[in-house]
Length: 502
Picture 1 (tube, rainbow, N blue to C red):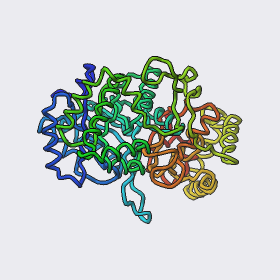
Picture 2 (picture 1 turned 90 degrees about the vertical axis):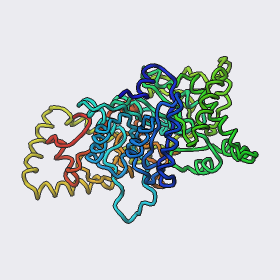
Picture 3 (picture 1 turned 135 degrees about the horizontal axis):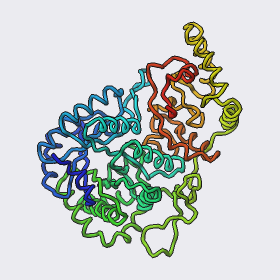
Picture 4 (picture 1 turned 180 degrees about the vertical axis):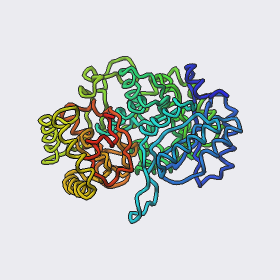
């Protein structure tokens, strides 16, 4: 059986995918009734079935997706890394393949709501890039999967924004077939993402997120909930004013959604990802109105400008270009290290001895190179092989290593150290243990989970200061969990660990 989403994208059609939130707040029968109605709309090629939306457990997305397909709607199953190890994720993928479900939306997932600080943290065995790599490997082994991934251009601090694009490149390199944006109401950011991909010769199709924004969701998003979703004060004020109308603002929010669809058509997006409504009649109206408004997309793009005041943009805005949407900055470069554009509020770089430490360690690495076959490496390999044969000595070495690295880097004794690839910032200190960049929940350089700066800001700022931002595109494999509590020094020299070089 053909996959309507993949077929439509290959044909170059402008597609519409509708998000179905399978939360516990909505009866499963209601979601399936909506799926049946959406199946009757020829412009809708798939229904995206959420999992762990907003960090809350919902209905089983595989069961809902299977039932939606029986009603004629191709499912796109959200697969998150929350509370699943790699074996569990593989089992889910095998089940999807056995059911003939191809579309998978690979996500890191929101941190679980109500997590007890006194209990062990939730499992994040893989990040989204590693998950994409796993799915692509299974596809090469003969399983049919079409992989969607997320990206958020709606980041207004430089580190947050650029790292989203770097991470998207990693996902594409890992095997992603389709990118879907996070929610946002800023045409300049929609254009920024499209131009970034075009400049780098990346032809992966992108769907723009079109959220039907009512008053209550707008107020939640203005407060940063769910993570990664943000509504500007200006947009919140507009939605509140619209909600005072006799229809509660319904006409205004549907018109805004349709205008966003028209803008996405004009910008060359592959389609629209419609959320915020489970009403098939509303979806149909948005689709039809979006097509009707398409000739006016440049005018509408100029109006869709609910970004952060003084926020970071990768490309500087120009005037007099004869287009409603902004033109790229003449100073911007396709190489990230040559960034031009509007800086906006930059994240604070690491300071003091912590900023100096990477330079010292890099200098030591150049003086005593051990990342290739040198005399120093052969000698140290012999020493660590001797240590490894003596468990008591190996344990003492691991304790000594932790004694050094924990106060300096927050070491968690994972046994697969990648500090040298991440500007000497330990990825295990991320609450989600991401190894390939920040999750989409980071906002203004702050962590989604803890009230502190996102660790990936430090990685980016150090790399930018030394002209090594391009190096951050390198894929970081997941750690070998069996090495937890062992010496990463021994594992490195005896080639047991998982690292980019291998």
